[in-house]
Image (cartoon, rainbow, N blue to C red; front, top):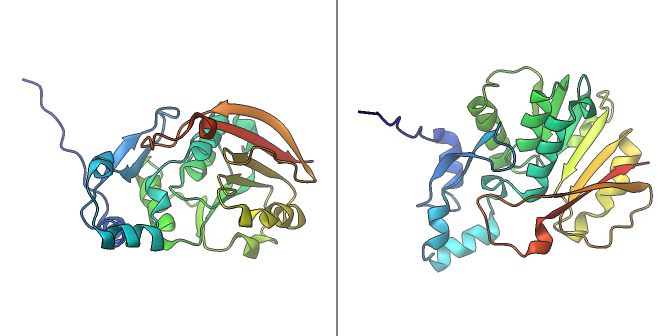
Length: 229
């Protein structure tokens, strides 16, 4: 007989935070389709077939757990870093809007000297820490959690990684702010069709998906990469 290992339970602090938004949902360790080197604590897709109460829907809008999905641009950026480790090897990096921490984890795996995982959402920082543990990076001193990357202007940062930050066009001024504060920025985006920000150039296109799959339109599965000139 073959024995099946039980699915590990999500860290209590992370699950408790998550259930402030989705009280009956689970977080499950999930291997990524495009980055099978990395496993993340992500929402159990079974909840997407469930009928949600009005209170839960309101909570989702008020306190969305973005970090419980791996968004297409984050997955594509992680893939790029693992395939091209020279982008981050030996460098001090900021993963802006870290979410699940997938890009920060990929940067560590690719040999970054230090990675600041930056996010305003406390849940995202909990998720990044838990996901680092899940990927064998527990206690890795190279990973530093931060709630404000612009406090790091004097931290010797070489590169900002900004994946999927333009889902809200009100974030567009961040692009210029990155240029003012840091020497180089790599942007990954699947939302903006006519990107024409001064000081940036297009450097490539990859296909990826948000996971668990939200059934998004095909246009949102095209991830465009840009970097500062």
